[in-house]
Each structure stands twice: as C-alpha cells, then as structure tokens.
Image 1: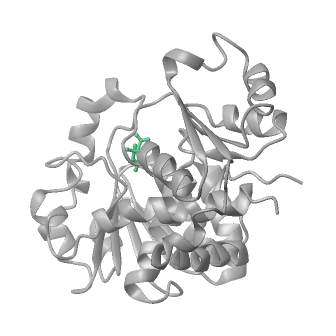
Image 2 (image 1 turned 90 degrees about the vertical axis):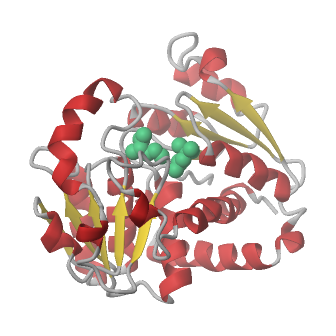
Image 3 (image 1 turned 90 degrees about the horizontal axis):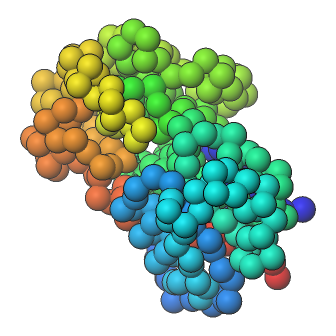
Length: 306
Ligand code: CP
Ligand code: NVA
C-alpha cells in the first residue's frame, strides 16, 4: 500500500517520532544515506513560488541518490491544461513520487486518490505539513523534548497554523493561537487538533489576545499576514493585524529562553520586527535548514521500496 503525506495527521505520533529519529541520523551522517533512494525520481509540481521547499526537496532527493524534476505553473497548469486525473495517471508511470505545491487542498487529495505513487503536500491553502514536522524537529533539537511546552502562534490562522496545531496535538505540546477576530484557524483543523489532544494530553487554546498567548511561552511563531494567493488583501490586513506584530515588547512576555520561529519568507516590519528575527533567540535559519533533513526522512519513509 502506498502512503501519502498530505496532512500532518497522516502520520501517527509513533511515525512522527520515527521520522524525527531518522532525520537526526541523516543530519549527523548524510553520507550513510547517499544511495538510499538510488535512481528514484521525484516530480515537483509548483503552482506557487518557493525558495525553501524547492531547494530542499531538490537537494534532498539528490543527497539520497535520486533525481528531481521541476514542473512550473506554466508547464502543468493543473486542472486547466490537463485534468488532475490525467496528470496523476501520466506521472505515476514516469516518476516514483510527486511533491505538489498548489492552492486548493482538494487538488492534492485528488492527486493522492488517482496516483499509485506517494504524493507529498509541499503547501496548499489548508496545510503545510513538511513545514510543521521540520519545525517540531527543530524545537525538539533545541529544547530536548516537546511534551508540555507552550508553543504560541501569533497572526493569521492559516495553512502553517493548521499544520502546527495537528503536530502539537500529536506530540503532546500545548499550543496557543492568537489571531484577530475573524482570522482564527479553520474550524475543522481546530476540531481535529482538539480531538487528537484528548489522547495526548496537549492543551489547545485559541484567543484574540496576543499578550495572553505569548506570556511564558517557550516558542513564539508567526507567519505572513497575507499568504500566497491573498495579495489583494495585504493592505487591509496590515491594519487588522498590527496589534499581532511580534516585536520586542510582545516577545518580551515569553520565557527568557523562548525561541522565535517563522516558516519564512518573512515580511520584516510587518508580522515581525528586525530586532526579534535577528535576535539570538531567533532560530529561523536552523528551522529552514531542517526542512532539508526532515524531507529526506519523509521521502525515505514514503519512497523506499526495499
Ligand atoms: N517555508 C517555505 O515553505 O518556504 P518557501 O515558500 O520558500 O518554499
Ligand atoms: N502561509 C504562507 C506560508 C509560506 C511558506 C503562504 O501560504 O504563503
């Protein structure tokens, strides 16, 4: 049975911990794994821009002995030039797995249903699961454990926020989310996280008060106020989200050893100020690097056949 990675909750707590352990080993001894996916090919479909996702999947598959193929929006034009079904039925005969970055989450769900090969979500409007696993791996690397930590996300209740919620719940971390009214995480994503949290003992809190959320936090996380595809709302959102900016006064409410995280790209001076993102507490570049290591472990888990 092929396995996909479309949402964080496609993996169990145990599977995530296995991926983390493998990530640690791959990061420490990359050469040991240099033939793990020999001759395997990953197609990368991008319908939105990318620096980190494209680079880390591309470099990652090559470091495992495989190849990648970049398919830009102009080439594929998913669902317009050709149906998602036809794209899936073609590619499954040519490559060993497909990473997709697109708009509607339904597109990756359909792709996974149609293709006989693993599909990896490289960001949709609903989830960014590789990001969240890399982020929690980073937190584990720095803090030593995840259970019981207070992780606070401030800003828009978006794709990254949804994936972080699931990951926190699965890993037993407490997650606070502070958003402006009307920009809370999607109800389905919130309910899924609270359901999982009942099993793992994690606490999920959604509030409109950024100060309450950041107070005594171990991790403060933010993301852009207008995601890719929401550019026309950017100006309106700047006013609404201003009280949710992670600046030194808000970040100062967190624990003294709190870390600052951001999936990047950052809009400096909007959701985060330079003094926070450039401070010694900021781990944003370690976080970005870990996308490489975590995705190598994810590809290994999904693509390794023997
Ligand atoms: N964080 C992240 O996914 O970055 P890119 O959009 O550059 O891939
Ligand atoms: N929420 C952002 C994340 C970018 C990595 C977006 O979707 O544009």
